[in-house]
Length: 282
Ligand SMILES: NC(=O)c1ccc[n+]([C@@H]2O[C@H](COP(=O)([O-])OP(=O)(O)OC[C@H]3O[C@@H](n4cnc5c(N)ncnc54)[C@H](O)[C@@H]3O)[C@@H](O)[C@H]2O)c1
Image (cartoon, helix red, strand yellow):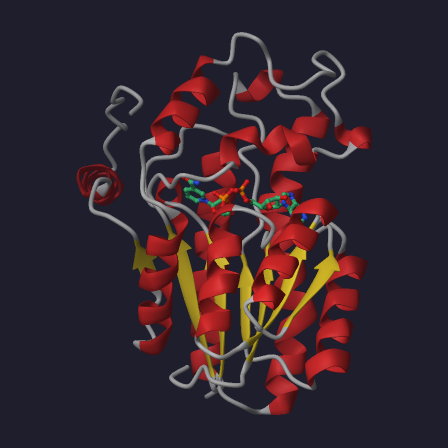
């Protein structure tokens, strides 16, 4: 997609972090932007700020785990702006990071996979048929992670591998059909957002029964990532990288080269059928 001016963008997870930065950047490109998020207060704040700068934006509270919410989001987008050209399936949670996979509850799986993977599936199902029918130039961005490109080590990474794989299949199928819709899979390294406070958006019915007040107290993994994120790249930098990548029709979108050695090690192990060499978490 080369032209942004007057086109319509939809961003999920637009209330915070990268999604919010994408919405703002797209608005500055002259797009009409629909911001979707499960957090109404964050949406209200983001939309008020963008409208104060005279951008044409709309907020739609959306739980990406629910296909019906994505359908409603698509309909509200068409009602307001008549078309949709750019869809960013970006909402995500760090989910169950803490412990062994076999100790995770069904609710941990349902929440983590529900937002990170099904959220993208729901976005694809709700928007792609509309985008194909309108037969205009368009683009889909799915936010995976650098953890989706290296040996998986936890539930979050499993979901991000799935988002990368889904995006690769989507890219291939659209190309085969000669569609005018590009696809990018965004694989950020560590970015300074509220990702590691994702428990705030865990639905009550999927709360962890053993730890109803939030993350497990011994959660060193989450604390480590939280500290690292605070010292990392700012979301607007990722928005700049993403806009450039969409213009250049780039499929794989990276934010840094910090993960190169692990990507190479992963590919080497795959090609050689070697047992993974465990490296210390970074
Ligand atoms: N921050 C990082 O270091 C990093 C690295 C790689 C990938 N990512 C991915 O980037 C994406 C954006 O996350 P972020 O880092 O900006 O974190 P963030 O927490 O700042 O933003 C995520 C947004 O998603 C929303 N959200 C959560 N559950 C939702 C649901 N069920 N329905 C709709 N919205 C929901 C949250 O309310 C929040 O506004 C996620 O997919 C995340 O996995 C983040």
